[in-house]
Image 1: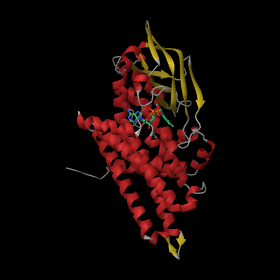
Image 2: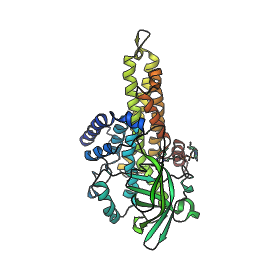
Image 3: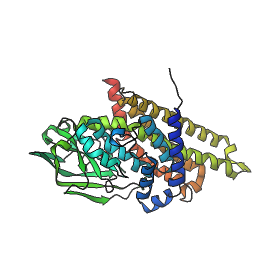
Image 4: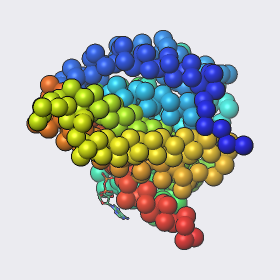
Length: 379
Ligand SMILES: Cc1cc2nc3c(=O)[nH]c(=O)nc-3n(C[C@H](O)[C@H](O)[C@H](O)COP(=O)(O)OP(=O)(O)OC[C@H]3O[C@@H](n4cnc5c(N)ncnc54)[C@H](O)[C@@H]3O)c2cc1C
């Protein structure tokens, strides 16, 4: 049977996070954006709500929610601020390789400490020469007795300067390209870990995006995830898990833009009547609403596949790609509905448009999503 309704628990989760987002995030979002400032206060409050570590199993201190709940959280948070949503969401992205491939002993060792407080994690895949093409990763992991020694510089890392735990992808044999990659958990306070330049960004400015530098960082050998030489697979499995949630955040920004444009169109009078009475404006609003709904269902379907242990590479790529493109189109149209006022910082829609752009870029650009989809179609 097909059932499009949320469970009572999911509805309660949605209500809880919507109230939090509207009451706590919306009032400070313009200031965080303007000052390009990460807010530890919001992280603390979200932690108190019990949702910061939502994916982590109960036995390691989390509430063990699923991907559908992740979509609900992502949409509500991003409808308030794309940057704050990314800060919280990237904690789950950084932990996902660990949840997928970490040993029970390592989870027991690191996760309860992480989930006991308002701690964030970061996902360290990208490097200056390795964006879409992760086979270009130059970071290395050298085995020395009971340890690995990690060297390299990661770029554009969300939560880079504020995370306490990183998942890091480095090569054990650069000759093997992507087949030489392994994944590791690295505590941020390990000697040799430092952070570089904070990026000055177009949108999602409430996130801390930085270089993370690993200079002869010694970690215990059992901090490697999986069997070793399976880092590429772990990274791809992680992204299959996370893309529905990223798409849902894009839906949140698009929904907020649609709501703002609809309200404005009913108020703004030109030619003696509200612009909402003009069919040209109505058609724009209708197209925006169609795209927001379609994007949400693609995300929830991809999340449902994840939660039910079914293959979802193609569907999660579709969800992220369509939702990212939707966010860009809908926010651009929202600025258009606002006319000149939409271009001004006095109204929220220019921020939505800036925040939306990133959904077409991170977690694999939308060109790469299309390659993933096509690869599945023609294989
Ligand atoms: C604000 C921000 C936060 C980020 N956070 C993180 C993070 O937390 N962790 C992390 O690891 N990374 C993070 N990233 C990195 C992000 O995932 C990469 O920027 C992205 O994967 C693209 O890589 P690139 O920037 O090197 O672009 P490139 O790979 O150089 O791509 C440039 C252009 O070429 C296109 N292109 C490349 N290859 C192909 C192809 N084969 N076919 C068609 N088109 C192609 C791309 O689509 C793009 O349009 C973040 C990036 C940003 C901007």
